[in-house]
Amino acid sequence: MDMTDRADNELVERFFASQSFEIDDAGFSRRVERRLPRRAQQLNRVWTAICTVAGVVLVVLTNAIDGLIDAFDNVTGEFEGLVYGFEPSMLTPLMALITVLTMVSVWAYNVAMANK
Amino acid sequence: MRPLEDISLVTQAAIFHNKRAFGQLVVKYQSPIRRFFLTQTLGDAALSDDLAQETFVKAYLHIANFRGESSFSTWLYRIAYNVFYDYVKSTRQTFSLDTVAVRKQSTTAVDGNLKMDLQEALAILTPIERTCIVLQLMDGQPIDKISEITGMVEGTVKSHLSRGKKKMANYLRTNGYDR
Image (cartoon, each protein chain N blue to C red):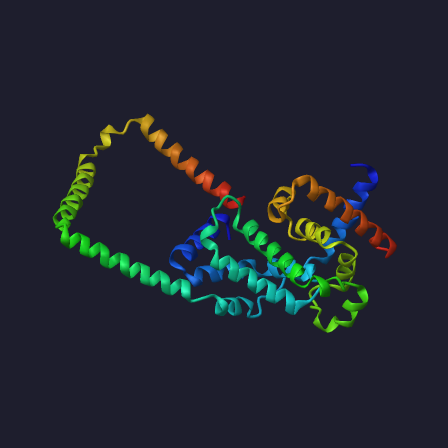
């Protein structure tokens, strides 16, 4: 980029910086919302209702309810076992350090992404 | 509002057809999108609002096609760009009457937001130069995003920017803006 191009750039950028403006909503968003089609929403409701009914029928026809109860008991049993099986003495200083470092890294990443 | 929040709102609008979530996106982006149209139409506020509404309705209808490969803002600008150039194509004959004389006759339609200096400076550019210049200098889009929005290769975008800036700089010097 030569001197003239740079001067042109600066002049145009300065001009645009002085001309910047924002537009008030003034009911625009509401007007857009009124124009959004309802059909998609209705189709979605119909589709959700069909899937729900089909799911319930399938569960009843295949006697899957007992299986679902067993699966739920297994998951809650595993979780309870995990909670009761935890002993603070198992937590070595190295594990505690890794845990803290992981939490700090996740926090720093979230802060960095938020400020990006 | 951060990009992650945009994605969360887009997801709610796409999966649950949550109009309130989409409404938040409209509130956030209405100003830059309407400003984009206002500069492209050289200050025709009524036309800008119509085109901006069409942009948001199209975005809502096709929101499931948003893959998150680019930001929601870039995707929205791409729709706005297509809406504007579809409009230009559909009204090519009347839009080519884009002379200062015609615009000055229609000043009643011109929005007070678009200052007359800016409007006249933009009027000396070709539509595509205007689009590239506004996207870069008013909306702060980098060249790769402008390329994505307009579908032109980066080299072509740079050429339009360079030509447009040269024209504008000459215009501004002639009108005493360099003092």
